[in-house]
Amino acid sequence: MKTATALKVEGVARRFGATRILNGVDLSVASGERHAVIGPNGAGKSTLFNVIGGALRPDAGKVWLEGADVTGRSAHRLARAGLGRSFQTTRVFSRLTVFENLRCAVWCGVAAARKGSRVLEPLSKCALWWRHSREVDERARRVLVDLDLEHAAFVLAGALEYGAQRRLDLGIALASGARTLLLDEPTAGMNRDEAARVLAWLRGASVGKTLLVIEHDMDAVFALADRVSVLVQGRVIATGTPAEIRADERVREAYLGVPLGKEAP
Ligand SMILES: Nc1ncnc2c1ncn2[C@@H]1O[C@H](COP(=O)(O)OP(=O)(O)OP(=O)(O)O)[C@@H](O)[C@H]1O
Ligand SMILES: [Mg+2]
Image (spheres, rainbow, N blue to C red):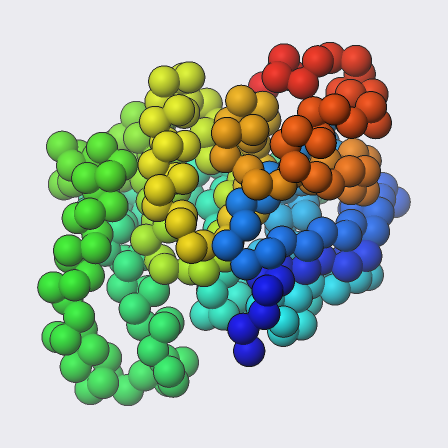
């Protein structure tokens, strides 16, 4: 069922040992919205993504994806339901080439989008491959060009320099065709020019998709996001448009009086 809300998080709590990391997080992301999560180091942003993305079970609370309760579902079942993600630390198949990485991502999206893909018989897999292999190549090539990685198509992903690996990681998340994407600090470690270029690409490539993005660079947040949620000590203390968040006193306090736009990375 299609709903106006792509992703909803209600009362999500999670502790590690005796330490409470998430203390009842509420978050709602509309279909097609670009929503940023900001907050100080250690606030629980990546932990929240791990709960939403199926890597961690919450101790309490619910996660809804396109109207379905997906709390505690595994990452691969979530991928089949249309959720993709990229990580704070780059995860690519280092022994495959850049192009092979992207083809895998596109192919997984094609296979997952097909009804009954869960138990694809070898024969129907072959038929599917035959029918779609050109399209898969073409889509992978487009992402390659968009990411400015054409020259490195046949380089092993593990041999790429850091910024290029981050771009590839992001490309894999987008190439998979997921409708909702969790992106954990997509521009981490990039220089300003590179980050600006990648964000410009991301804006175009994500049209029609729902994005939940953790980002430390405030210029990037304000340029990319329709709405922003601020996570502090495992709780969302404010949600609003970038302008509303910029003007919010509680947010300024949470950043210890540092003016927004000047946070340490
Ligand atoms: N698997 C784990 N086991 C124990 N503690 C953990 C685990 N994962 C995260 N933590 C702790 O939970 C807290 C929140 O971590 P998290 O990575 O979610 O923060 P974050 O908001 O993403 O921070 P950053 O901005 O530095 O990426 C930290 O104190 C971290 O040490
Ligand atoms: Mg993090």
